[in-house]
Structure formats: structure tokens, C-alpha cells
Amino acid sequence: MGKITASIYLSLDGIMEEPGLWHMPYWDDEMANFQRDVFYGTDALLLGRVTYEGFAAAWPKMKGEGADEMNAMPKYVATTTLVEPQWNASFIKNNIAQEVTKLKQETDQQFLIYGSGQLIRTLMEHNLIDEYRFMVHPVVLGKGKRLFTEQGQRSLKLVGVKTTTTGVALLSYQPSE
Image (cartoon, rainbow, N blue to C red; front, side, top):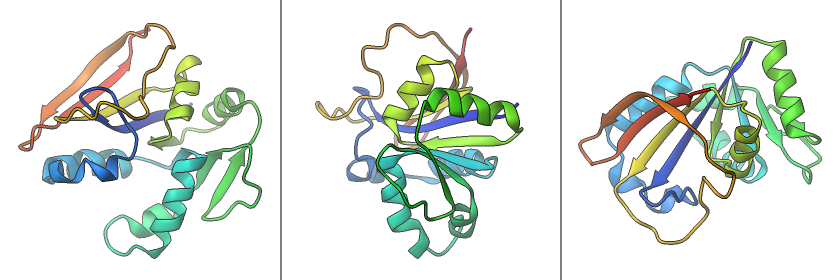
């Protein structure tokens, strides 16, 4: 059975929106290694539409470590609006949870979600995420899109913790159920 890992940049107050505007001052080798470990253990990406559009606009132009792998990797995109898949993508248009469940059951692939808050919340509601990799930055943003909204209580089990030299907590959790 396939597994899904969600890799998420967060502020201390749970904001995940536009990390490119606030996370770079905290980037260091430890964060790079944390991200590299999850990326190179991945077979395919699961993305929401907004994250997919941002990545598809940027990654094909990139060179260097990870660019070829990212561009070649299959991408499954949750969208109701996009019609022409590009950048090695397939669209999931209806019943996201059901389609992702089917993907997990039909393969042993390791799926990775970057960003994509709405997709993560949908999959979380259906207990489809196997691991969460949070990079909690020492910054309070005060406003923006939150990862956790009013979904009800969730219990997670801490399976890894490290603090970077820049003060970012690298936390790995799995569902406790």
C-alpha cells in the first residue's frame, strides 16, 4: 500500500501561507537535509491546484540538485478548474478522498504533499496521511492561511524532532490511531 507524507513550512502560530516570504532567513543545511530526505524517498507528488500552478511555473526553468527529479516525477493534482494537464501531471477532479484512497491501495508508491493546505485538510479528515513533516519557524505572522482549522481534535504521535541552528523545529508526526 502506498504512503503519503505531508511536508509543511509553518509559523509558530500555524500559518502556512506564502512561506517564500518568511522562511528563507531560517534556511540552513539541516533544513535542506530534512527536505532532501523526504524528497528523495518520494515516487510521486500530490498537490493542490495553487501549489501545482506555482511549482509548474518555476520548476521547469530550474537547474541543479533535484530539478531533473522534480520535473520527471509524476504529479497528481486535486483540481476542479484545470483542464489541460502539463508538467507530468494527472488531475484528480472528483471525490478527492476516494481517488487518493484508490491510489494508495493500487500501488506501493511514496507520495509527497508540499503546501496544499486544503488538500491536506481533506486527506486528514479521511485519515489518509501517514506522516507529517513540519518545519516550525520561530516567527509569528498573525494572519494568513492556517493549516489546522475547525476540523476537530486530531492526535498525532511524535516520531522525530530536531532543532536547526536557526531555531526551526523539524518535527515528524504520525497519526496515533
